[in-house]
Image (cartoon, rainbow, N blue to C red; front, top):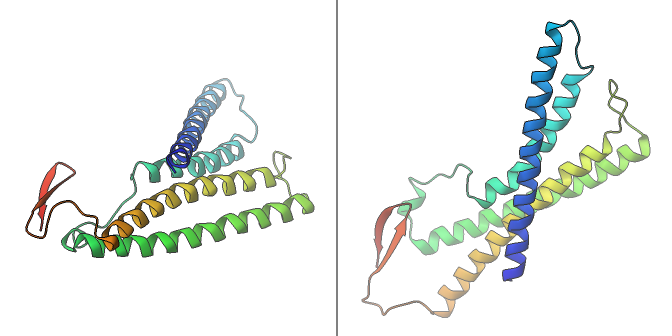
Length: 186
């Protein structure tokens, strides 16, 4: 399982580096286009190129964001619940996310196949659309893998709790350090 976790993290980091290169390419394209306009030239269809690159940037950066827990989480009410209830809720939410993003991946594959058969192209650039649809599906697959790793970690916690393998006895106090704040659990 450790290899799976490391492989998923490596894939998410690789996709993030690809997204960063995409951001740099977009910035370079926009700056060059602005400078060329000073001399009454411009890069044709630069808007469409930027849109396609943004599709890659957005999709390829989302898995790394999930890996780093960079998404917004509702914590005020959630932190007041017991650890067991939080874990159960996180497990249910993880299952819903896995099902949702699994269907998004499947839909991307079907849509990409239909576009490749239909020969749809970006009108101004003349390039096919389906590779970008497949890249979107691939980016969601990376996100799905990260979410699956999180799900496996939650399942491991639930199994530990159900088998009774906790540290300390019934009267011991465990101290958990969470984001720089200490909170005590009985």
